[in-house]
Length: 362
Image 1 (cartoon, one colour):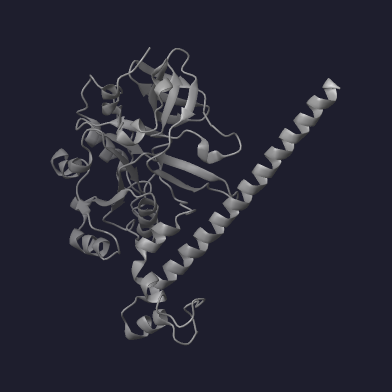
Image 2 (image 1 turned 60 degrees about the vertical axis):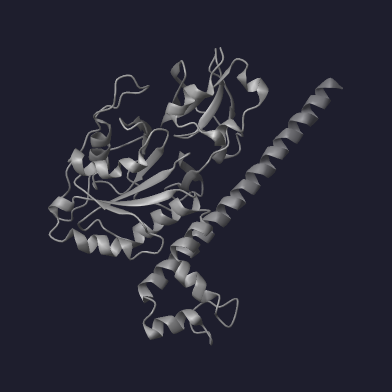
């Protein structure tokens, strides 16, 4: 079985992936996209293929080589056995929830990130800055989507706060139940485009997905099933968790949409460049400090503290920046240490197996 590049376009394939193919890849191989990830299995789809296979990791010692939603795998056309994982155009990851230091892959090969929050108590500047850092570090276009605008007395206030963030250029307010209003998101959902949604539980992500996919044509590879939705608690406007797995959903506009479970514990790791963009004003000020090792506290000649004294920099913003860079540095260092230990352990196992083999052959 062979494949044609043109057949892959509807799945989000582009020249970036074509450039990774070798001549022999066209012989009894086919690219497939990871459509969903569940515990113990992943769902894949491609020209003439729609099935489930066991989880795949090209390097058993490296979590980041495991296939996640949105990834492209080159598989055997007959057995569907993975041959290799194609290089990613973009990837979202975080430090896994809990006390461990493992990295968790969220989604791959995303073009646009819809950062969904609602016009109520869920709106949180610090959380938005986290999501923005995640998007910008992956070189993915961020769009802040403000839901439940129809329930707010003054949605314009939330819009102004969102636009007040560094690097924010696109904010959309809408009622996720209204197809007419949701149409404002379609420019980012065109054929071949992949959009991911992030946001805390209860902000209307599942409702938004259902609205974007309810008119999906039956001829496409996957037919979107309605995602269950739940209301919000009246006492604090916080949501109830609904989505439990990550999956690609086809949209009638021709694009693909990746849902992610509500991430209450988004621990950043390895997103230093993204943080520099989100807090570009502070980074620029820090370059003017008298000392390169300035901690922006009580040191003389500190441009950052001077900006606070003159009122040109919000002390709360500086506090959030300090917290995020410390968190990111700690998580990234912990991840590097774990990788080093895993690599050393892998080498030791190989050495022991080699010695054992030589001993048995003696």
